[in-house]
Length: 291
Image (cartoon, rainbow, N blue to C red; front, side):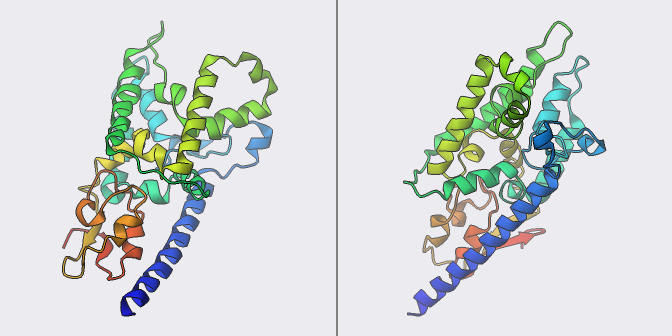
């Protein structure tokens, strides 16, 4: 009976903290995209805030966006005629990562919120084979780091390859809204738009059945943040004296991890589901050095 009582308290705690995280996600979305009226007008914000980057994946070409996308900025610098490694953009990402790790994915990324809302649609849920998690690192290397530098035009300027060929966040937040507000653009649609639309539809559909599909398989920004997880100040800590290995935390993990063994995994997004669902309070989210 006491065990059921503690499990009930853990479930209530999970619901409250999940609601709080959703509120923070919506707030982050509004901060990154305050110019909602631009959707109807079909124009982009081009003010001084576009010189800064949002911590999450948020297309700079979205009409509502106030900030630039860090992945887009990395490609723009790498693909410039006078190639110079984007130390300042990379430094920004690493600085955020060394403080928060992949918590950005759980709390601040607008496209992460889209995936979570889609996954709430009633449907069979599928566990993704772990091998797929490595694909995002290949995408990071090929489409973000290599292609913008290697594939250039006559002026020596490279394409932002990830944005151009893959990014579903850009298609959803920028491509489709701009097409709806600018009919003249529809006359020049080609194969590339069809490919990007197909990628978007696959990601959206897969997110219904597979938790955080884009984060786990495709997102190069998540790959970069994941590399900082073992060093980040914000991390998950386990009290081995309290843990009874009941598996409750693993059953609530959206990334299909076992928090008892993989709290420092590159895949952990610090969503605090494991923290709030543990009936024995054996797991906590800690900011600072490990104790």
